[in-house]
Length: 324
Image (cartoon, rainbow, N blue to C red; front, side):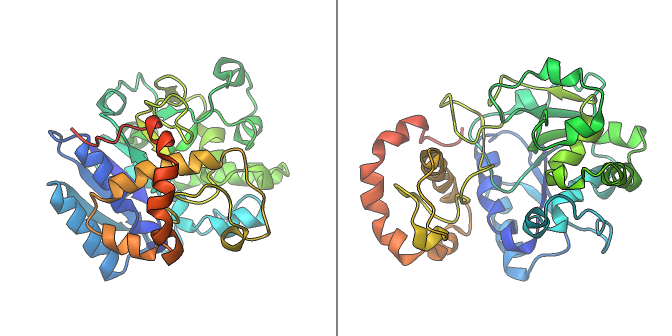
């Protein structure tokens, strides 16, 4: 099983939790991790290697040539500042990874695998370039696919699939001669039509180009769930969350001192708490667990047991037994 992460040095150290979640749920599977980046510091490389070694996994660091994705600053200005250049590196995974690799699962760093996902990973491509997932429960995919306009499908309001989790047919990408210009031409096309600010980073580009070249897998949310709607989703993704799970362990509400702007609690705060619970359970299985824990504010460390007891009821959404 080949896993791709594409991230900068700032968040790479948190990938160890995602790595551990993959390994412990596939105990009899050889797992190979590939990191696409501009380079990591020695500490981060060391912890990633340690976590991989703990589970007998392989890891390879692939440095992407400078400037290869310099023209991919798209979307609204706040999005451009939020997503680094590394966001787009997986676009060229078929060229950056060894050509002997036919398929690989790309995952965002904020993804946790909570069950055996081989039925998804090894599913037939059926001539498509990607096996994709839905992170929205109620989406009429058939109706969406009737829209021929690529600009429509690339808009953040009309995307068919989520790009935080997808199995890439690397062999198919090579055979179809997908290259950097494939993406740049689409970005230019969108810009010429005055829609560049509507693109939601890599997700908008991938939907606009490949909407008719993907195979949707599983029921809605089965392989990409940021709310754990059913309680048995196999892949959990902290997409759209107020804060990432490594920023805090759990909170009953939004603290304006922490989150700024005096925000009021959102109705989906509980989703942050539920996902944070399971994320930290898997974090315990990573080599740098203590270091990640040390980053959490002292207040939250002191209050964790109190919150944990108060919110035990939320734990029913998760199975605390992790791994095989």
